[in-house]
Figure 1 (spheres, helix red, strand yellow):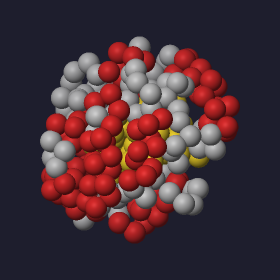
Figure 2 (cartoon, protein in one colour):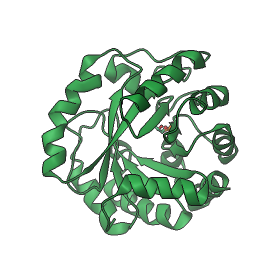
Figure 3 (cartoon, helix red, strand yellow):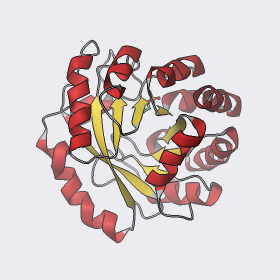
Figure 4 (cartoon, protein in one colour):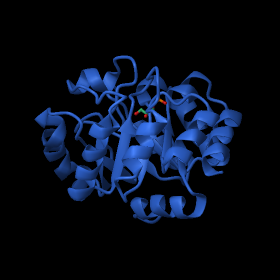
Length: 248
Ligand code: 1GP
């Protein structure tokens, strides 16, 4: 992306299209060549930005980010599992704090370790309150972070977490059921959280079809993230259906 204000771009997406579609590419689950091909299809299908990352990365992130950059004009936003998951070949980073947990390492520890590198790499940090919601199964983020998710029937707990994120100056809230979640974040919880905050709300984890994505937008989501479903069947048509459902 030529201009360096990805947060501004994301806000514009909401203004112009009502809601946005983010596709998560996990380098652990995608060959380098197919990742580049996916990036081309992602752009054509109407996706608004690419998230790059995962809970556990054992391979080098740089070639993946570099390949994506050459294949697409869309913003490449890092979505790191920890402070090791950084590369200069991206535009921005979701500078997340796992605020639903009480593990100091993921509240502030990894952020401190990452900060100098983010500055050196000239990445745009987008402060994001990351809230893990029970998705009906144990997910990688839950295990790797050593934190308990908020029960899915407790919007009264999720709401104040999101509001605290806003009051702490965070620019986005991410309601996360975890990649491969059995159940996505409930629509009632999305509505309850959205009613308490003014900053954009990202919802992801376990969203498997365009209808469900559209319902989450109606419930109050400003951005929908999908990962797994495209890893399983990376089809241009499916991505386009998601993009159309979310934008309409
Ligand atoms: C994970 O929310 C994202 O952080 C995407 O989840 O892989 O289940 O679509 P899925």
